Amino acid sequence: MVDDIGGIGDIDGTDGLAGLDFASVTPEEFAKIVKGLSGKEITEIAQDGELRARVLAEVFGRMRRQFKPEAAGTLKALIRWKVTGIDEAVYETEIADGTCTVREGRSDAEPRVTLVLPDAEFLKLVSGNANPVTMFMMRKLKIAGDVALAAGLTRYFDIPKA
Image (cartoon, rainbow, N blue to C red; front, top):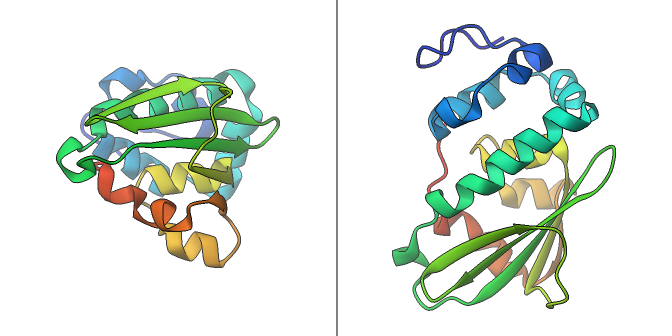
């Protein structure tokens, strides 16, 4: 349980997240919420299809706002995310010309890198609660394509620390 994060009140597992207005939660608050969830609670979230879809949509929706164009410079890359759980959710992040666009689903374009990880690891990664290199070494994160790009992705986004 995570207590009183920025005036949110008590967030207790799936029930607390289900009623949460994600638009009112800062990235730092989200990171603290994820840090306070047990593996069992994250699994419960992942098994609730509607809640999982809301969480994924919010996380990917925020990527545009958390993008650091000055860090990306002239980088041009399509990153495909496959988040596994009760089903596979696919999102793509395209970085080009100092912008970041995100779309749900798989395009016909060839990604420069594909990241495959379960729901719990995905939430930990995007909330700054896990190290991507450690996740890769422990086989919690699978990478196909440009491993060097994958290893440096965190520098292109303002990822909060819980």
